[in-house]
Image 1: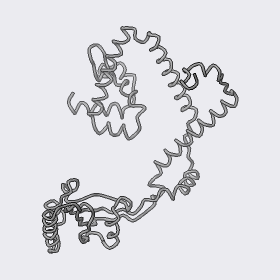
Image 2 (image 1 turned 180 degrees about the vertical axis):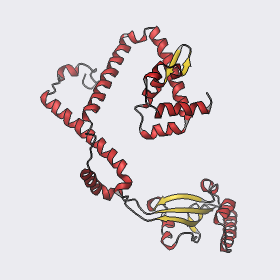
Image 3 (image 1 turned 45 degrees about the vertical axis):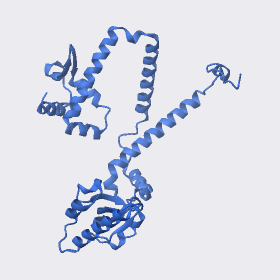
Image 4 (image 1 turned 90 degrees about the vertical axis):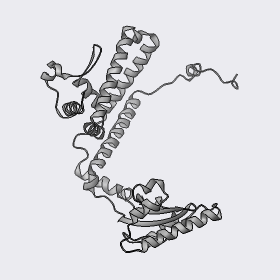
Amino acid sequence: MNSSSHCIITVLLLCIPATAEEHADKANIVGRIGDTEIKIEDIRAALAPLGDAEKQSIAKDSAQLNTMVRALLVQRLVLKEALEKKWDEKPDIALQLQRVRESAITETYLQSISQPPDNYPGEDELKAAYEAAKPSLLVPKTYRLSQIYIAELNTADATARSDAKLKLAVVREALKKPNADFAALAAAHSEDAASVKNGGEIGWLADAQIQPEIRAQLPKLAVNLVSDPIRLDDGWHIIKVTDIREAHTPTLVQIRPQLVRQMRADKTRENQQAHLAALLKANPVAVNELALSQILPKSAEAK
């Protein structure tokens, strides 16, 4: 299949609801290996348990969907071979299948009966949860930083130290020139492999992520100002602040979707625990410790 075909399949699977015509149409088949076929409804069923973010990712990258189709085809091929050899009828395999079935029934049943109503949480509950969570929602002040790094280890010999000082002096003089291009100088002189390709840009960092020696200089730097060289154990760091985000708390509107998901998940767990507690109250557990002790071999000390 070419990329255009993949995109068409992606749209069909994620955006178009199943119809009676789909099931009757041979175009419903999206993959085949030997006489084993994978249909749109098979892929739709495989996609169903995925979260919205995963579905959106697949919708944007048809290669992921192609990989899923191939994996399902291989799985079906192996399954067909195993069933032909009556693998599922082997006593130990049948026991495993029974346990998987019981677990799936239990988990899906509990999940189903524990779901909160569609209108949960209400507006008042949402606002109360937001207010209660506010202290933990605080986003600390962050800095977008770039750097020019000149290596000079504390253990370096005299020649290496002299070379580093000379290189540092060259960079400092270049930075003093009008309209000095920090990114270009970083690309030409910085020895930090991680940031040099991006003109020295390190990215966004919170206070706690920044070395104390550098953090101490940041209050003196406004956006686009460059620090004096800062000595660390690994060498010299010249820092430029390219942007600052002040500490802030997201508004309820900004975090509403995440908060709703979290509250529904918490309520589901709460409902499950309440249901299990009621079930156990009506059906007390009794364990035969004597019989239980016979299951596992006794330790050497016990003997």
